[in-house]
Image (cartoon, rainbow, N blue to C red; front, side):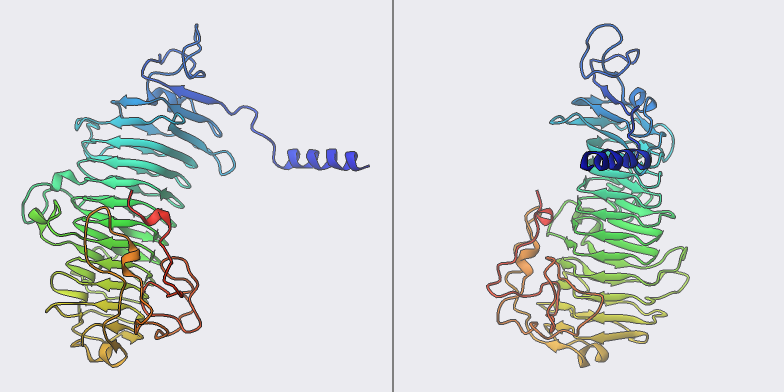
Length: 464
């Protein structure tokens, strides 16, 4: 009876979830031949062997198939138009323990604003590959439910990696030295304000997670003209603007380490860089319902800055909470320009500002509410001052702005910090930067202190 029931269960499972009996694994190698069948990792005689080009390999793909690319440098433009499904995605990756590179040599693609490696199909995963030296865009995903995992994208004239579809994901990617057309030394860039990595142009539910983004000659990480973007657990430093949130609704920006270091390559052309910046440009859509929480932001021109575009607007139903902002180097630590603000909460943030610069510049507090913030010095903003703790927050360490080695552990609270147990409890913030639970009487800032102060950032937040 037991054996009969087992066979019955297996039969029902196979009926409901039939296996993909036709899925194949294809291979590409520089030593291959596009006339082969692509079904072997190395030549086995006859038609059995790898393809020579990635372009030939992707044309063979169907739902559930895998394409492994052997190590080497491939000088070609790639467009992946095939689609998988949620149960049978397509995978394109370097061969295990090898590393494949797609190199445009600054000549590909030839078309204006073209893309060197583009995924137009849905449910496609590209993984463990390097894309470099595009004449225009490096990597672009316009197929829904597609993913870029551990992609190294760098030295492109324009964008490094663009997510322009619904439910896309970029995770564990390294993105650097893109928007090269702006590398000019002029007061304003010559290019189109390209970015390191962006979710934009009518994307919905895109996620940028666990990425390291640095030295891009435009925005480092951005989302624009989008809905429900999540930007989380990234390390973003020394970009022209580190994180930029524009023309978006329901964006969540959390647990990011964002900083600028003195005399980094971009300062010679652009001066200091901004940490997290918000502001609308096209009002498509007008920004609203965005959340900036549990970020550590240090050493930037402004650590947080909202600016009003030419068409008006303001911070609408925005929550800026439990962030640790440390030592702006120009203008102010936190600056919110005058605008049509409404329903916006600024709460439980640490604003440590040493030297002569102000902790905050907010010309008008209309439409803004303040609660539970800690300022290291008094602010000219009466509403912010009235509800704030004014004291040195007592952070573990907040110097040594060394590119590539700074960690959020520098900015933990110490045992005697006046930020401890001094925050206002917020239902939408249950954890801290390090994913520790917030207490019943939570601490101000991005770190919730635990006895012994031994909490370390997860490994995905250490530069490597």
